[in-house]
Structures are given as C-alpha cells and as structure tokens.
Image (tube, rainbow, N blue to C red; front, side, top):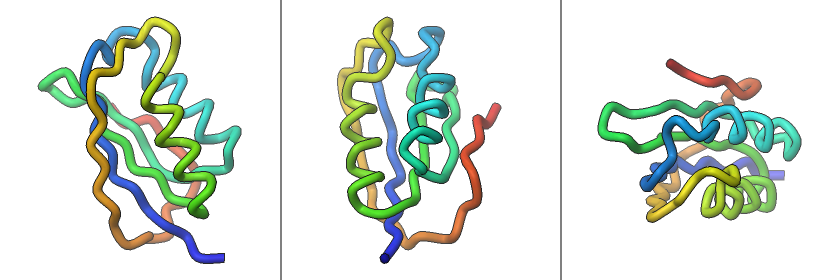
Length: 91
C-alpha cells in the first residue's frame, strides 16, 4: 500500500475555534500521520500522510472542520511521503 502526502492550508474562521485540536483527533481516528499548526496570517496549515482513502477523508473533514469553524478555502499540494510518525500539534 503506497502512502501519499497532502500539504494543506485552510482559511476562514479556523483559529480560536478548536480547529487544531479537532484535526488531531480526527487524524488519529483515521490513522493519518502528520501535523497541524496555526499560521500568523490566520490560516491553519497541516500535513497529512497515509493511504489515499485516509488522506482524502481527512481533507474532506477539513472542508467542514469543527462545528465553530467557518472554512472559506482549502489549498492542497501533493508531496512525496516522508514517513512521518504519529500526529502532532505544532505551536
């Protein structure tokens, strides 16, 4: 099974609404590896690695986010998987 990697930027009302926390929980439930962090410009950035179905489910979840989030846009860049272990929240 080939792992894929998605580098994702989410914009909208995505900071101060539990987006990073909820992303980490969702990723762990799906078995996706990677990380998530807030950016100074108000966006959230994330890296997801796993099999295609897992990563696509994660991106679909990011389009909604937690209930308090208002997602306006998502940018996805596909990259080479680098073997990230676990899922972390970066600060």
